Length: 332
Ligand SMILES: Nc1ncnc2c1ncn2[C@@H]1O[C@H](COP(=O)(O)OP(=O)(O)OP(=O)(O)O)[C@@H](O)[C@H]1O
Ligand SMILES: [Mg+2]
Image (cartoon, rainbow, N blue to C red; front, side, top):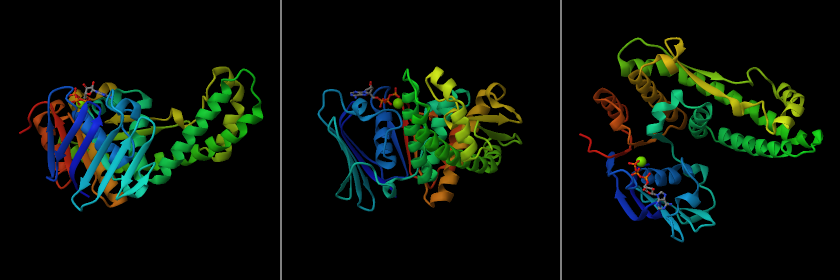
């Protein structure tokens, strides 16, 4: 699937915007605040179903009554989305849907400047990062995660009530333990797959023998649905006191190791950048292996953050992919 053009109306600061991009690499050049990331955001909505940074009320151009975004592919197909301040609709080849159908989702590697700080970010940011990837690996991951999040929200609402009937938590405990164990199993499996490739890919970028490992840290290690459920039940008084669910996979974290030491604090700035590049290349390889599709590559203003060697490795690794780059300065 190759994108031929993008068209935006009333999307963020763009009243009307058009980009032809049927070349392998397209560059969106412009000063700060001119709307470059917004173009990638629109592409992301039309390939993944939702924005990576906001919800529609924030996205619609201030003062406008609707937005419309449109991707045209070289094979003649079109995917569009409209939002009128209340309702969002996708149109896929003349068929209207509320959500982007799974079969029309397309794998994307998104590279944001903030990803370069992934190793030192909060656990929540790392969970979000890996969820965005794993959701692309497997539809089941995506549906289990959204069911888990809904159940967690419901359970937390009950825990905030002054008077709590223990039995009212049961159905939520059941869902949390079922989906919690499922998500845990997939996260563990996927991180193992990352680890099988990461060091090798890192070494090809850094041209040395350093070793990279991601540790998947979870309270749910070796728990079954039953033992997970029991833990939630045991914790109910503490959770009621705290007003939220203290145990579960929503506290998971991913720690990066550099030569057997925590990378946060031991890897240099340049090494950290190479680790993140290796992570992106591993993502692309795994997506390709799992879905048999080459992901679309969206690079948001990351060139200015990288030295010449790392820029080169980014370009070399993603040749044969469709790449859309934003930048404030021109790139040679
Ligand atoms: N809903 C909205 N309506 C109108 N303008 C908006 C809306 N949301 C954001 N903006 C503005 O749109 C502009 C474009 O934002 P965007 O993040 O796409 O810029 P950018 O070119 O990527 O900037 P930078 O180079 O600083 O990353 C910003 O000035 C922002 O304040
Ligand atoms: Mg930007």
